[in-house]
Image (cartoon, rainbow, N blue to C red; front, side, top):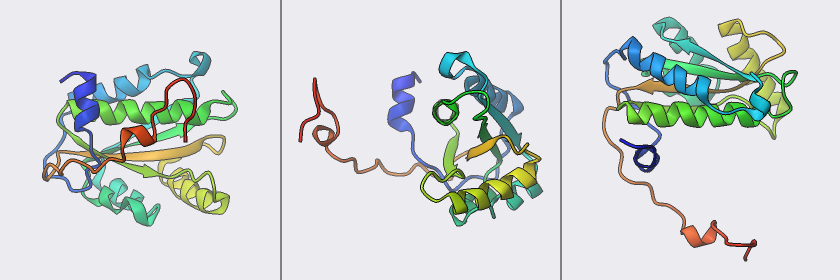
Length: 175
């Protein structure tokens, strides 16, 4: 599968088979995260691999939107450090995309759980503090997301996409 095929195939998977993920595949996914670009090549993002069942179950309580972690066989928490780079959020977000596409290429499903909330700082603090405590993350790091991983229970149907013409513009923004 090439990158474009992974992009086309990628879907959010929230139902996973009860099948362990080989360590080699998890390491490949972490390598992809490590190789993801960052502004000025600064190490503004870090990754925590979680495979412990009890820890995954605990993290499923970080927000009502990540209950699927109870079925995931692994997860990767993605953090960013504002003290390292002003582009920490962009850097961490790009790495999340690399994680997701690599998982897809390897036949795994992934689900994206936003922890950082840009429009509700109180909610963001609550979510981030929960994950920070569970994973012993230093206070100078922001918790961007948790991506749950596992073999998909089933392949979901293709998503209904908005018309390309409504979001792709040429030469200038057109209404």
